[in-house]
Length: 162
Image (cartoon, rainbow, N blue to C red; front, side):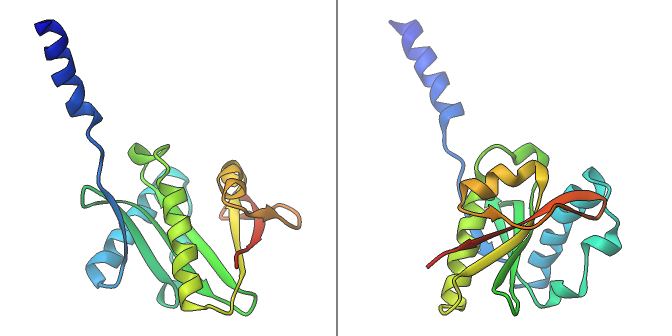
């Protein structure tokens, strides 16, 4: 019996849930954290040029951070365009992938964009082909031909959310 009790007590600690939250990156310190994640994922891992990753649209976009136990681990942005709302620069640090954080972040961005632009229902993005299943799961559908962006094959995807 004590063996079962010890096992149970030891099992509880690893099963404790991580606390995650999503915040708007509204300060220069938070934007610096956004850029750190994007640098790690896009520049270091995927070998994108910094000049392609960081653009003048950063100043127009609304940026978000997903925090796990107060540590920034994922980011994304959106901006309003003539077509609708474009979701961009979704990135999760390698050690924090496969936890559903990208889905949570994208769903949050969609809700925030809907609140900011209530007359807009059209959303679109440029998905790296490898992560298209994530976006399909969230309701996005491919359109047009694949194309190269930052030396990576992408597919335009769109969705309507009312």
